[in-house]
Length: 537
Image 1 (cartoon, rainbow, N blue to C red):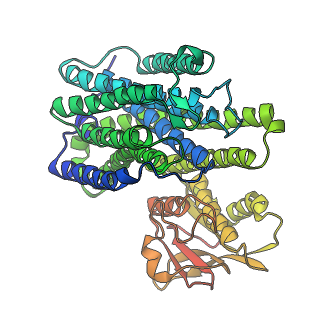
Image 2: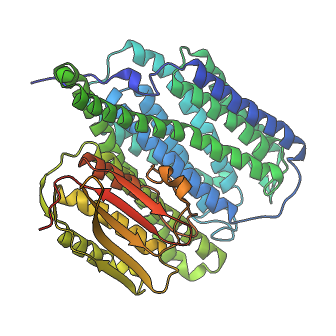
Image 3: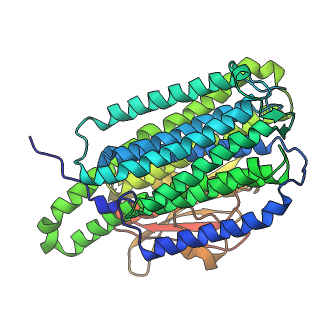
């Protein structure tokens, strides 16, 4: 039985040594945060108006950030079998769970004293457990990573370890939640109304000291990987977060309370951003390797082993994302649905709207994940070439998009297109994305008109087009149109993830064609694409 190729450990931020560029960027980030902290400290006790909507928006963003970070770290653990990564992933999962119950028990948000049997001390103690648990996990990560470098990767199945850790972390979060709710009478009182007691100062000082300890140990345990450097940035932000939100301020809803939580949200985003950039670089490396393979056929055999190893790493990474990233988001939506069903009769006005906000944001994140995975799969998916009748594909795509018209009258004018040599499933993706764009951006037009046709270019090749009479765009920005996440309109005007046109370009180029667009603001847009092997019959 053949052994799996060992992953290239230098391809991951958890093992890649931090260079001068990463260190400088991290230092600048910490210094900028410190400067803002110094400015905010004298104003930390300034009372501000309570904004209850801030809590669910902040908490839901924090939960989604931490869940995605945990899943990405679990994915890297599955490839590298690093116990340090497993511990760190469990820490992000713990913070996501604790942030969830912290929001649910916040007094006055969903119920006068909070849900889950919360009392006046519950939310504050959950904050302490949450902000003490993560630094302890970071200390464990720092102590384990050196042992991981010296030891061989663990031989046990990675996903059984992940499931065991998820169960342990969930049980720990549940136990601490029970202690802070039903067992709150056994804990010292750290809140008096919206203000802190003397006991609070002692408890939060200990939590703050844990964050400083984690930062010092991370710094001490060298050499530093890219992940280590950004974890130090995270712990620095946590020090500022706790100082403003619980040490130097007076209580809830003062300037320190809000500023500290903003620091916490930024801290949750740093590692996630680095991991997502790394994932994109892995795919870019794979695409570049395939392009080099086509250009230099004589090097195919020399590069096959390397490409196979990278492919297997990416397959494992993509499986972890596609299988596990959507699950926690669905859980969030499921819990919100349960809350609406169980407490819907008692929730009116702002609380009900806030639950809707959480549901909507989780749904958008699910759609973004689906689009990104579809985009990533295009680089690995083989073309199933056959003779494709484009007229039939357009007809099917139009029927699929009828529900998206929302009852509007949209006129689809389709000319005969003939046949091409291509992959019917991927070409349908091209047509659906272009037609969906046309339907979306003609929403304010009455009547809305979408044309699909074919023209002959000067060199004799056939070019197909989808034209609409919608809002259009500035042609000077057309070169950015097909990039991932490129949007020329705000989400409030037109929904979308900014991935559809990137998928169109990748599919067309994989077929050997090209894609471009012509438009002017307020005058509609026309998207062209060419495909080889076109016929008129």
